[in-house]
Length: 339
Image (cartoon, rainbow, N blue to C red; front, side):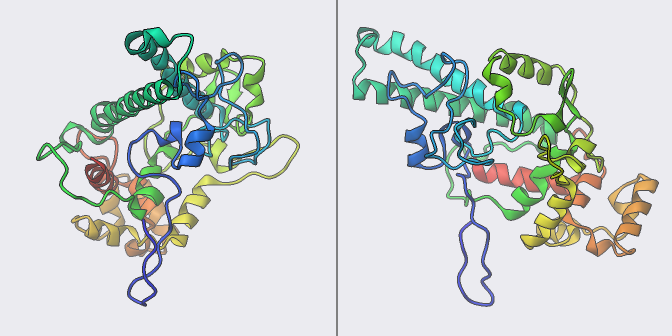
């Protein structure tokens, strides 16, 4: 979202650091500098290490969560090293881009196999990038969102074209609703690898590039946890745990505080903004009596004080979907705008 004006009725907003569109920015970056730094400028391909199996290491020129050291990978998003499962996903899409480059080269530029000039390189890169970005869009809109929201709640085109909507990311979406996934995280990424031991550990891949495949297979074959108010202890007590240190964070506390720092209104205010009726009681939020009682105790009996992130996780799921009314409405709206 853009920075607002200086008037009292026009408050400042936080600024997004990445592009809002489903444009593959996690693979290619959100600005020209990062996009160019990730390119090999040979046959349209992205830079890699370990004979093409792993992501490139930082040469100190790109910002990165965790620092700019040469022992950290770089990708389109600065969070690539945060945990090894995320690193594996980034690696998958870089490998797919480079695979597509070989396919495009063979089909459209067969005579440039040994000598691909700047024009050839640019054409291959841009076409592979468009295909990867389109793949991400297709997975998101045709597989992920219908499964998450329920087929009847998934966004769909109404007029078959652009209609001038504002595609910027709403604060309620990025700060509250779309953080539902923290409830889904399991304590183990694969057998023998706890999440608490997988934060900022790119060295795990250095001598074992096949770990990328092993992690992806493990994630594909494991079940996500139910979306509710329960969050694994790996995120509550060991977030960004580093060996030989006592520094760990609590993601639940961070999410609640982040919402307040960003000025996200309580749940009932956001519900009304989305055209939903406010909750009159805690029993309206959830039919789980024990949970309703705990929420009442936590918020001093005032249902109008419940944080949006907490309420979004606590609400009963909509029929056919995996989320409550609030998160369903916010996420559906945001992805309709992004279309």
